[in-house]
Length: 320
Image (cartoon, rainbow, N blue to C red):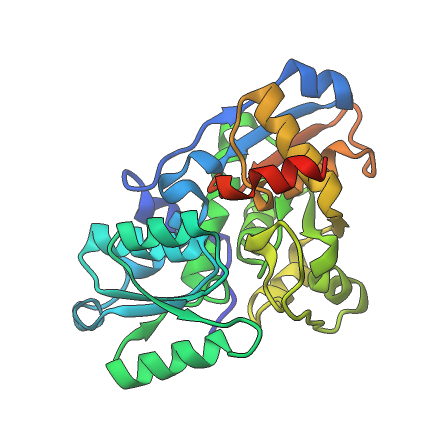
């Protein structure tokens, strides 16, 4: 597959217009005072399905042929992409099978089933989700729509940064969470075209820093089932498309540990009144921890999702 470019992000923006939400851009005097910067939060926690993933999912599914739509799709995901494919398929009347780990947050599994997705569970410690997805695609004649390593998915995710810069103007920094790299690479493509001087920073959980290591070594690195509260970033590696895009367009990569991530998540809840899941707070955690010279700068932060598993709250609060 060819690597997506800004023209594909533009095309995706037209494709999803009127279906995906153009999400709120939030600001906070408290955050600006704390950082010395002018900070803009792109609230993808308020997107349909509770995360940015709906953008790419709808962009990809809406471009399928009539025959592909009739036969249906299959994907694999721990939660947000699962919900997005289930919801986009509901909107477009496309059958969809979702391969989810048995330990996925229950709130995400319930929502995926609620949107009409057929959930197939697997054990992430002993089974390969991609192999299961390929087998289901072969046996049932389904089209496989991976969670991040697909040109229409990447282009669709890039519309979040496109909207942000279109609304607030050029940025000096843009912080985006990174799991498989779909949101990060799509955002970086948009930022390079619309604000060439913008430093795009990808942020991972410290326990799953494969993309950071890949970025540093310029060699694809992997991680197996990292233990982190950022369940949406527990991916094994960047993809064959997202890895070269990250190397080409991203300025730097960093990671944050779980205590810092949880503290930032609760800060967003308490001070900004924004319900963000741990993965969704990755970019904010890196921007607020003082590691980057953002004082006096215009800073964008993508809050990537808000699908919080409330059953985890007692444990999270105990770790503060």
